[in-house]
Length: 79
Image (cartoon, rainbow, N blue to C red):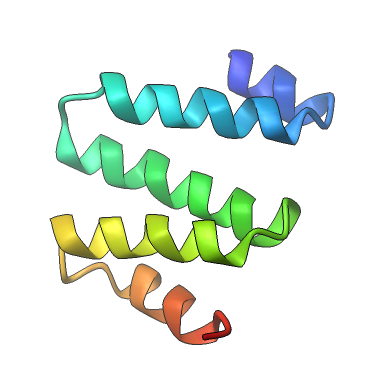
């Protein structure tokens, strides 16, 4: 709800903060990975923060090495 409102209003930095908080509060690893992937995509595509995005993608892979989308994302990021 709030995340959609922030996205509709283009409040990307606040959305990133909200997603980080959701990661902290979640106890389900699949949900954490889903939120983390959304955060990483936001950091990469909208906020132009590839280093931070890479950190999130790596965290996904640490939790579940079978996440091919995170592997593909890391391969396309510089560095």
